[in-house]
Amino acid sequence: MLTSVVNYRITNLNYRNEYYKKILDKRLQAYEKVYSFICNLKMMVHDTDESTLSPFLLSNGIAEFEKQTILLLVPIRDNIWLSDELSAELTQTNLYLHSLLNEINDAENPEKALAKIANDKLEEIRVRRNRVQLQMSKDLKDMHNIKRFLKFEHE
Image 1 (cartoon, rainbow, N blue to C red):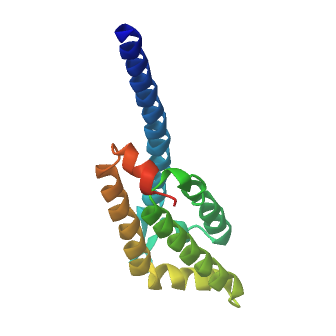
Image 2 (spheres, rainbow, N blue to C red; image 1 turned 180 degrees about the vertical axis):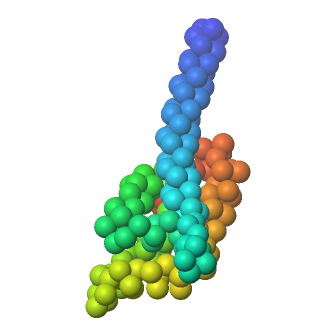
């Protein structure tokens, strides 16, 4: 009888550990997508003609910016595995990028507007990227605490 109880407890603990491993794997995959998002925002291009620095996202024309903006939705799609704080930061950054896209598309000369925004909004894009990166760093430090994630997140 005692052996049955011990075996049951061991099986239950093993099941829980496997379950936590699967959740941790899903979370790590989602955070890898966030890291790619951060890398896309981090890339800068130096314009030698004007001697300016601009985000890579904004340096290859409107069609490419639209494509990159859509690709940046990938980490948001997996937000169930992210902390609520990181998910909120990603959403705010995405809304900001879409507002830039709308501003560009509404301009009389979209290509000129794109170049102007690339120069004018560089610091704001850095600030938003840093917020996402900081929250991601905080989350990664507590990634191992699956019980806390399951208990407090997404309520």
